[in-house]
Image (cartoon, rainbow, N blue to C red):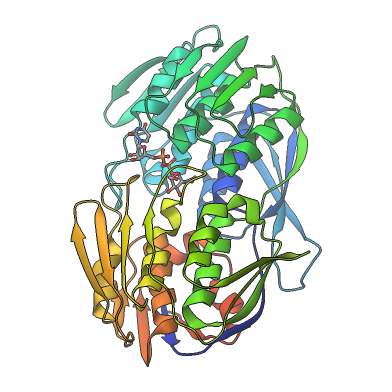
Length: 429
Ligand code: UD1
């Protein structure tokens, strides 16, 4: 199993190209199930989750060709995917695959809309909480799906196809919004989704669906009004910039000090996170090509932050911010309101010398003078990268074990950081 070795204490200077967003690329790839025509996606990040979803889609009969390197910095490896689901040959998404990546459950809505039936494994347990799918099923039932759960599988049928409906989510869910949005774009008539998640990745998918022939009003708001099409067509769409990768590198620069431009980053996608960074005393500047982050000399001010659905502070940046706060000039408070068990990084950060107290959903972080390198274990995607940030700040060597979590969501992480001066290397095997 690969490990990452980091020797901390180097400042980061230079530029980092921001990749296409994993959380947009996955549902966009799934949208290919909705049309027999070709869907071309540009700027797809090369990630383990993307490759796993490609395998799952191939199982359903999607033909996938990959070509081209996008323009821009030579070291960027955003790829162009051509996906074509001319015939869906299998409407079953098996446990072995869905259990490895929760987002693959989102094939349920599109398969049901296109084929009138689907059998998709329940995603199963997850390291960051129970993460049920009740909202997904509730939404699809409103569109006319009959749903049974048998032996760990969701068996869904829509005799005569899905129809429009009014879906009022009692709680904001990114995945349930994607599932219902995708399905409704091929359902008969109008669907209204209320209390929809407003994450930019949902807007990106909605814009692609519009190119494919769906009519969607309210993109970017919490009420989506979708006129389904009888048949969706092919389209060409470019995956939007990854705001979580952007925020992660911004926090890394804040943590080490230095001056880095995040090329292709879009500040409007992570305003709350950038505001929090500004409060810590870091310089955040919008440039023609992206965002410049700089910290020279002075220490980090503590902050109080609560995770919220977009446009609030993203839960996917909570662990990274906590790593930064471990050496702030005082006490910070971070409250996690989205996932009940998203604090696995706390114990590992403590191994590097962090002083963090947990009470329910709230972490109180007392800034210490400095962290010291140690062997640590990556637990989930965002927790893993918080350990990378902590290791970059720490004195001496940190060995991060089980780094396959990082490969799920960060494209060329070591290369991007080492080009800016980090001492980081992957030890394979
Ligand atoms: C997506 C993101 C993930 C991010 C999360 C919250 C992708 C691939 N993943 O995950 O990176 O951390 O949004 O921004 O885009 N819930 C229910 N019932 C449901 C569905 C969800 O109770 O049917 C709960 C969850 O347990 C959680 C909350 O709703 O407490 C939010 O989850 P959700 O927004 O659905 O997250 P994901 O779509 O799984």
